[in-house]
Length: 540
Image (tube, rainbow, N blue to C red; front, side, top):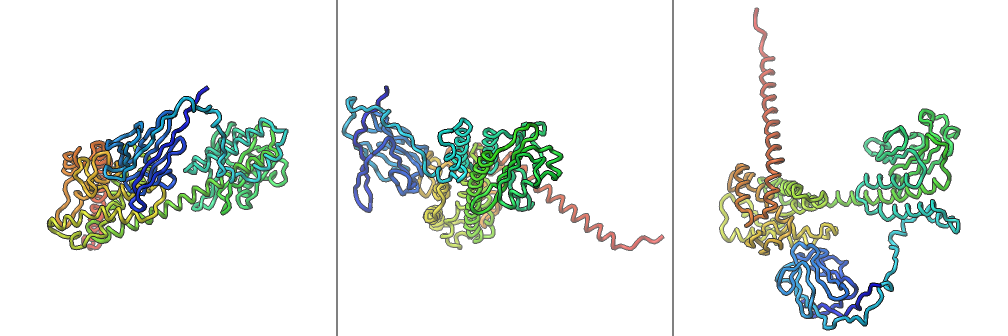
């Protein structure tokens, strides 16, 4: 039998400027440190990642582990990914000059204090999941009693899975596919479809389909049944559609020889989103009342999931419009730089694509690119629009804008997934060799997103006209970027940048130039034709 040692008493001493020295106890098998409020120790520092690091007890030792943070962790002054802690070790998160944490643990656990780890095992059901269990599910539970069958257990499991999984899905297609799979696993149905109401088309449209008979993956469900379920927000069951007075005369029922059919509205507290439809066409099997209750319960879980997806989508639209408005307010200060922030955001996202970033991560980087220059709202207009070379004093003034970006954006209550945006946006003038500004970060201390924005910003600035110079040729700019590979810019970013420019940017520029040339030609030809048409016909 496996055993674990009793955890000794350990603390972290922290110097807090407001309250002086304080200590926190390391309780439990894992102690989390980071900027987010859900950590055991919240550290309000923009150089600290949301879930920066953790300290775990492995049964013998306390082990410090960096969780892939943007700016790294230091134990006893050395950058560290993972290290066994000893009494008196100092820990700093994010920067070498960050607030110091001192680890203390004088005692060492003994074998005699070991306890059976089986005594520590317990099963917990998250109450946040149970609140979504609807009346149909509760009815199934109450009626099961002592006569519970394998089928009932399977359906209860399917409903619990739907409750647990669907709310974590972030895409309508994923929700629909998961739902239909669970339905087919627990009902004897031959065809099924999830239809979602399309506002533009003003009709129900198939989202996912499935069939186990010759009709394949594409079929037309009974419109009379789907529209009734949707329009009236009612569940429909027909044990024998061919003799059901409600539907027996319907052409779709007759042509498709539908025997038994069910349809449930996919609804939330605010609206009906669509319908869940299943039928049987080749066997004498019929759906029963308990089948309909299961289908309705599944549809309700889907309704909750779709409601959540819609709320997330609306929130994202609001955030993006807000960020775009902030970026536009900066670009509006100078006609020559109008569009710069938007281009840097797009270029950054495109470069990240060639580095294998996910779509969600690329969108967050796009937002940071949009706001990378927001601190210029504090730059004097005479300097911002100066046609000639800046004086040393003016250059120092304009170098303050990344710090302004950090201070302003840090006051915005961004959603959790955008907590790093102020740091990423404000660090685009940092250089991998440590000679950048405003923080003097070196190499791995610089967020990778900031390194990408740095190259995108450099490229766009040099390929567009400024008050003090004309735009430079693309190939010259590419060469300048490559010359600063490993000093100003991250090598992996430089490689991805060149791929983006040669595979996307240059071809798009050539296509745009060709379209413009074609347009000018057509205009010129049209003018000539117009003039010719006004000339008198030649005399005979």
